[in-house]
Length: 182
Image (cartoon, rainbow, N blue to C red):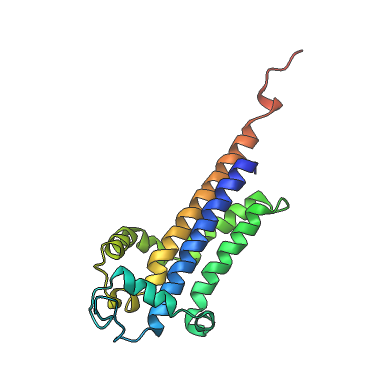
């Protein structure tokens, strides 16, 4: 793996990790936020109430790291762990490129809801930015899986197919195809 590829791959993994951490903190904080919490305009965060941008800040302020360390949040922790492992594989010069490629390809199997989330994520992001998302749109569905998994799968597939491209180029380049003098 060349230095440019490592830099791009590590940057994408870091972005995915940060996005995943943000979403996990948001959902975990929202679970700890009472329905009667209000923003500065007096809007509540109850059943079917639209969440303002300030509501997201309130939810994030209620996030506590110990709340994620329970069995209910095991799968999001696996996601974060896989992203760290992937970063280590890219960073490590001793990692086998074929095993690294298989690791990244396997992420699509480990996080299968991400494939569905690829179609849902644009709608979800638009809804959050336009302040039309409600509390149930986050709590009543596998929100973490449908938002963070597609981002991670996209990064993982980019890395996997980039590694494949690099290994094919390395296989077909070199002196074996150069004209030989007799």
